[in-house]
Length: 369
Image (cartoon, rainbow, N blue to C red):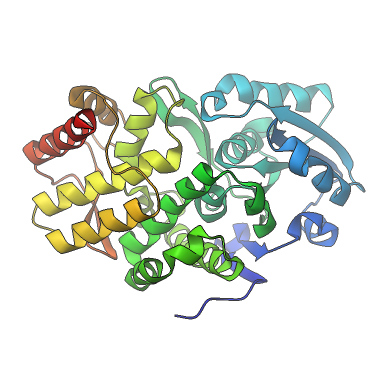
């Protein structure tokens, strides 16, 4: 499978809510492209204290013709809260923003989710644009219209579906991304191969070294391929009533890890990486996935420099948190499991004892480490 060249556009097909994902370098300075997707005159750029020194002035220069304002939020998953969202609401109200306003989320998943949530709920809905600056946001969280904030008892428990007008995936922003965050984003890339794209998984096995070296063509390829996979599932099931739930592979386990560690110790992609290993282990125990496929899954995740063991947490605590996961149905836990690499399913029909054994194995192994 050849590596694509920069300058690609992926369309998220949602009829009147359809929008493009632009993938290229230098997009942050493209004033004409931004102008095309801003229908009004008022623009609020939302970013955080880490990214503001790197990209805020560049974005504001591209948006200079608008009635422009900005707000800088604290950085970190622990700040993805209603309290932080309220700071954005306060800014919009204090500065007289109306229903024709556009919010621009300039940052990673936390900034994008908060910006989208505020846009979905301010005056019952205003426009917004995603400008993701992390690999995880570029390949996952900026696409699909899921917005929200965390609650102390569960990740993303408060939110709304609200599609952006466009996504600007400027690959130049990956140049300043810390190595740990870069590798965390690769977890979501691997996920697409596991759930529905075996050829992509094989490509990652062969070309992971290029990806880790941040080769420009390799990065453009994994972003485009990930966005195409997600756009396909979002178009088929915008509000996650069925097929889109496959995107949650590893997330029920991972969200429990994040919640149990108070959103401070583990990056989202790191927790999802372990969650995918746990899902693959349980799938193997159920006889749905071969041992060889499980080994390949864990090997690729480990080769990406991601954790494959859960932290030192009580299995019962993880199970308790998983029980209140928003993907549960009628009080019954639903999990995304694997029938092989490239084939996933959402199911309530798993063996409870096997789930307990998986939780115990991964937490006990971590304790032994």
